[in-house]
Image (cartoon, rainbow, N blue to C red; front, side, top):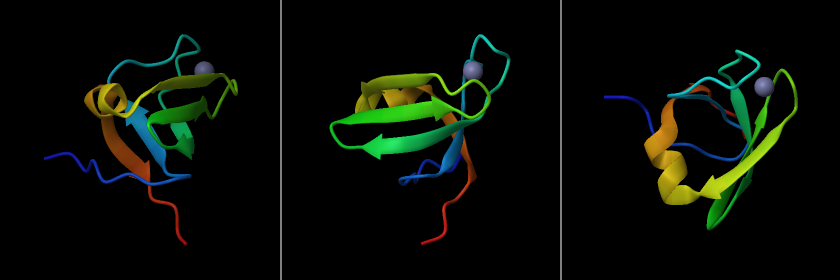
Length: 65
Ligand SMILES: [Zn+2]
């Protein structure tokens, strides 16, 4: 089962790659909505937490506190 325990500044892979062909995003805000930034082109996408959990495939890099 994929690791879906995510936290701020983790880098995650989504089920659908970004238009720039990159599939690595950094979580830059967490709350009712999740804000993620494409690590390649810096585009920012915001979506409700429930939607994010559904669209996220796995955590690639865990942020160390
Ligand atoms: Zn991108």
